[in-house]
Amino acid sequence: MVLSDLWWNRIISAVQHFNLLKEYLSNEMNILLFCKSKFPWKNTLYTKLKIELGDITAIKSIHLIRNKSGIAPGKLILENLCSSETQANFWPGQSYAEFFADAKDITLNNMFVWVEDISTKDDASKWIEFVNIYNNLSKTHNKDGKRAVFILECSGNFSFESKSECLATIDITPNDFDRHMFCIMNTSEINCSYLLKQYISELAFNFGGNNIELCGKLVLEGLALLENPPFIYKKVCGNSFSVGDIKTKSDMEIKSDIIISQVKIIFPVLEQKRQMLIKKYNNEIKKALPIKNSIDEIVNEPYELELSALLLITNKNKVVMSPVDKELLRLCRNIRNKIAHNEILLSNEIKSILE
Image (cartoon, rainbow, N blue to C red; front, side, top):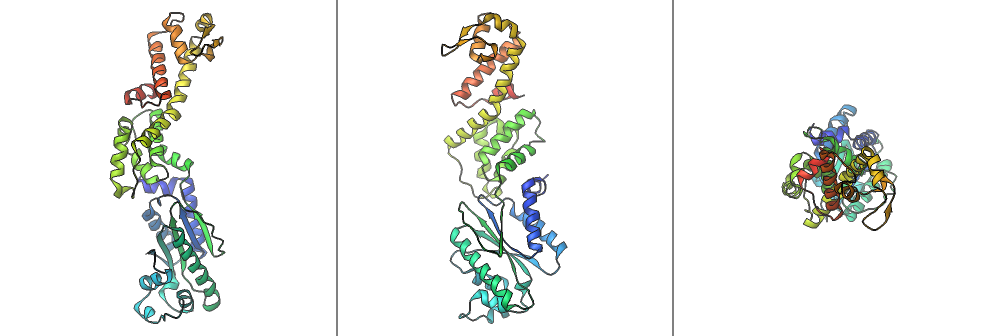
């Protein structure tokens, strides 16, 4: 499935947001559509909404208008969504909101107006103020009840409270749960174990952050992301046309994301294998105890043994393991030490423990 379709048709919160958006617009409610990160696959959402609104109402149609800082909202609407005849009827002494509220039989009254690229708090405040005034004046000036309905698309790392009664707020910022679900769902066609899919998914999740389009593009790189995470991350970010403008992370940030992925996915697997080996050789291990661990503490119970201590008594032949198990123990100890010292594992090391 195409990434954009998967997001807007399968991810729970995205589907809920779309249904809420459609419901509000069907009831002719103005909407503040907010996203703290890059707006995910807006064209897909816009097209889907346009089709489904067409099935609900034959009266209103949806139209895009781009916000421009420094230009009044009413002026943008007049110049971009109104006929030359309507523009000629506007007099500068009148407010735009009042002019639109008074106007009869203009095409604006039959529009859902989607205002895109509102990226600052000041611009958002101006649009909210305009919609408030226009909405209130329409109730008293426009007797037939016809008016435009606005969708204010705001994105950016700013916050504000809209206490407007005529604007419903929908925050579509992707949350961690949905980003995790989206990443793991897109690993389904990668030919590898489930644990490796989890690791690839975790790399994409950490690299992509709140940019869900970037997360999706990274997951689709599949095993290549596992083999060389820094190179693939920089390559995908270089194709900025596909994921929007991105500030590429520093090498230190990239390393940190990889270390976090290793700790979250590989550490628990190492613990499972440690406990599996102790359970398998429990009787032999008991005979070798007590011993001192790496910090001179006395260890009396098998399950208290760390990987290094377990390998030590195995190397001293106090516990005899099969060659396969002993090699697994050595591998686990080496990988654990690398992760503990913030080292990046080689892809063959990751495969050997997660396959």
